[in-house]
Amino acid sequence: MTDLDLSVVIVSHNGEALLRDCLASLHRTSGGLRLEVFVVDSASSEPIGEMVRREFPGVRLIEGRGNLGFSAGNNAALGLCRGRCVLLLNPDTVVHAGALEAMVRYLDGHGAVGAVGPALRLADGTIQLEAARNLPTLGRIVPWMLLLDKLQWRFLHRQRRRSVADPPPRGFLLDRYCLFYWDRDAACSVEALCGACMMMPLEVVRRVGLLDEAVPLYLDDMDYCRRIRDAGCELHYLPHAAVTHLAGRSTSRLKRAGDLYAMQCHALYVYFRKHEPFPSAPAFALLVAAAAAARLAVWGLPALLSREARRRAAMGLALARWAIRFPKRAPRMGFVCEQRAAGGAAV
Image (tube, rainbow, N blue to C red; front, side, top):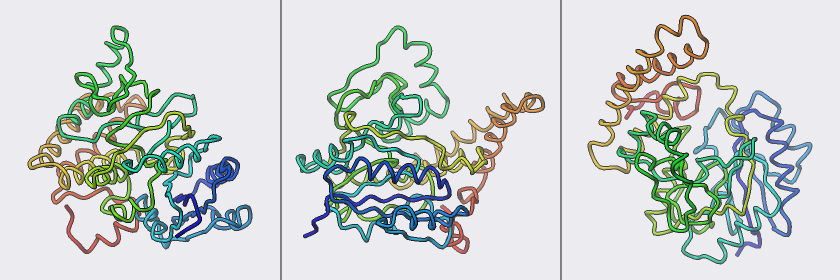
């Protein structure tokens, strides 16, 4: 039986300064916890390995032979974890005092809970929506793709107060995926947590298995949350544990906004094929095609005059390329899994 309380797994692709701050916050806030920390260097061009060896000699460094992505990077360390609990942590996070102890203590005291997540506070102090939300279904995704949930919130939020949720939040009308109306100030059971900071008992990780490496970015955490729930466990959101998440900083060097958006849509398509009944996946692909056409119609001409319009039009083009491609595959972005799949079939 291990005497370690916690194993922390961080996958980093560049972002040396962010990783340094993240590791420093772990050592500063670990309290009385006995922990081990893994850093998976996903073929960074920055000297991540040198920095970790020099400044954090107690950290276990795993150097990948290529850009592994979220799932494969975490999987490289999950099989080595010996702590009673396991924390998946993004390198663009800063852990607040008491957060680790609060999450470990909660898991120790709640045997039915398979994962917990903290309040992820953005740089401006607000709580990130993705900290806790619902799992995607086609009915929930349609308003999200068409931006109807955001429009509803902007037009109606003055007439309807945000809600405090003790039971799982249900959403309001068109807002049943991101849950704009939920203030995220109350601890409760939820459908999905964010992989930027998600803690699980090691026993649950071993029962559920490794993360699905079918898609290198996006919805890896949603898929894992679904599998944890399918294994009979609950997921709980703990707002009294706080972690700052500098969202997007660790992928800011991937300056292909359109491809990133198409990657997210491909991840949703794969999720629907895996978890939702037919014809959710093909219906979603048709929805993406319609969304791409709408974006190009709205932003095509303005793209000649505005940089922001060009960005939005590029997103529409990337969606259109994905929507008309068959069989479906994600945009090529240099991940190892793309090289492995090059000789195989797409989905």
